[in-house]
Image (cartoon, rainbow, N blue to C red; front, side, top):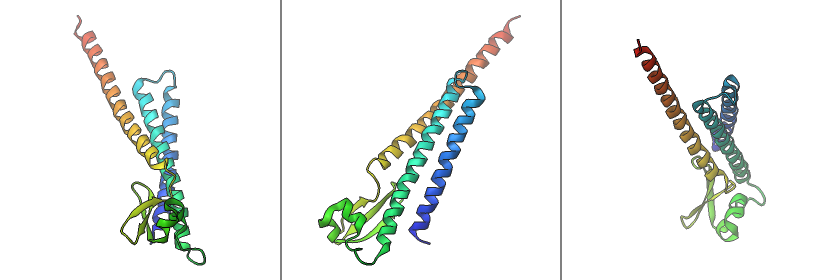
Length: 167
């Protein structure tokens, strides 16, 4: 199977992950109530929202790469120089471009020239930095949620220990 199948799979998985994480975040907040939720619950919901945004943006980038890849594989009249590589590198680079490959992390179409140089095409410039920022934010918020849960559990244990030791 080709790169197009991988890209379609990434788009579907990204969309499912985005909807699933949004559902988790909304159900977590609705169960506890936004105003009554503790810090750990809010961090968990924010982590899920950030993860959903990262998954959706990654799927958006994969959709762009799929479109560029289909355009590269199209062939026929007007297929040389490779149009996505022409748009990204200009006419000088596109004139010596031999082939284009899909790279998954970071998501992009990589154009390879005769001189051994390669450059990215097919994805808007904001996609990969935003995905990295949102994924890192999601991970940090998840760690913060775990830390807040631990602090809450220790505080409750301390309070139970104090009330249980009194005669």
